[in-house]
Length: 145
Image 1 (tube, helix red, strand yellow):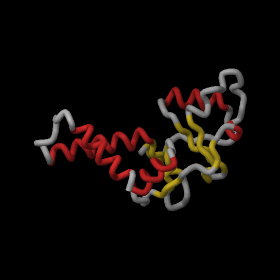
Image 2 (image 1 turned 90 degrees about the horizontal axis):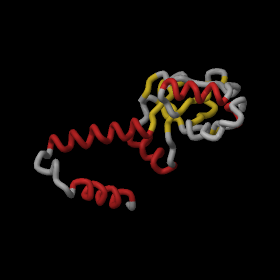
Image 3 (image 1 turned 180 degrees about the vertical axis):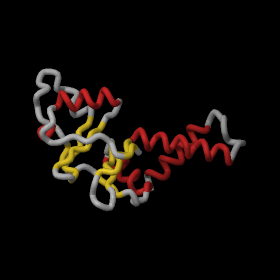
């Protein structure tokens, strides 16, 4: 999770938002209005603006983004992101202020770390050629239940 991420406003121009994203190597910007999250814009949302960079984010953003609280169980957040194909979750603090953003990249980094820990606990299975296939079988079985 990126703590206290950059945010944008509804009136920010798409060209400026895209420049911010590229300069800071980020793919999502929460849109905040009077301190409340009102949307999110992704790099993908902005990918077709070459002709008109003067469009305001209000016209391009996704309304009503998925939000979670700092104390939300990560398993619930990850499940919702996977089920709904969300690219990010805007994380709010107890005052409903943006405290962070959790992306699919963050989820993959966490998964990688957890799998490495699992391999340390079970060294006999690490490095086996069929390890990935076994993980996929477990996931398919879990996903279909």
